[in-house]
Image 1 (cartoon, rainbow, N blue to C red):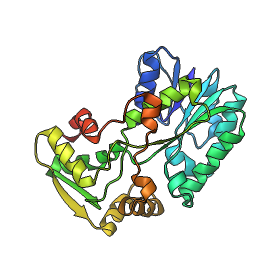
Image 2 (cartoon, one colour; image 1 turned 90 degrees about the horizontal axis):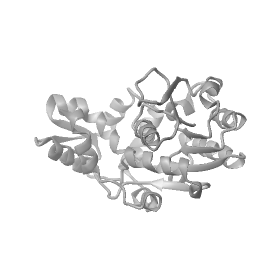
Image 3 (cartoon, one colour; image 1 turned 60 degrees about the vertical axis):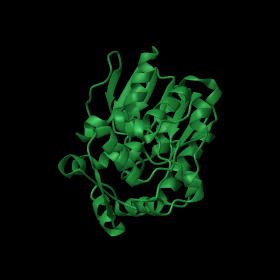
Image 4 (cartoon, rainbow, N blue to C red; image 1 turned 45 degrees about the horizontal axis):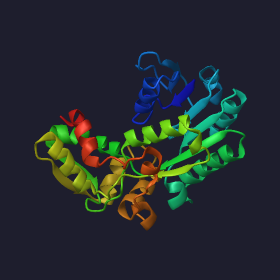
Length: 279
């Protein structure tokens, strides 16, 4: 049995499906009731309360751990999830971390994630750590404005980073869950190109077959919009990365190809696969 947390999200959903398709028994964990592939067991649990994971972990051999906001929820103790996995007899944990643990190690988010990585290293579990950069699926923030006005509004229109397709993260996660050779691996996951928000808008327009106009937001405008859905500190932190990526954050990593034997997907491919979201 493999337990997948965040199982209804952009990474967890394709990971759950991929594992089920190769005959693995899968338990999908999410905060709310959701549809899952046939044959997949579903458990509702809040990762901010690790005790609630006990039914999901029963009989599991491996765990994909995606924390998202649970890492910073009031009273959260992500290390307790690792300990609960050990206590339940789980043998392997694959942790979704972040590129920033290495490139910007002193922010509060990265300090907390690095501490969790260290807990995993110091455990008796087999483990692998995935450190993706920005996600292609962040373009879904623009769905409403594209549908309503044919506009992408974003800051730093001509500054790019090598964003990663969540489907590639899912495939790397599956490989790490299933293959012993990835035990102890730390994989930085990026896309194959440095791509700007303006370029992303053009790729979405090409997929739609209709024009999409780009509107460059000021940093202040972007922070105000982002702060509606995330803490202001995290919004500020994200904008700092997007506006002035470091050389390490511009590097195109070979790790997707190292694990999968093929290069990462291009943003244009992601846009074509997800085009219906923008119609």
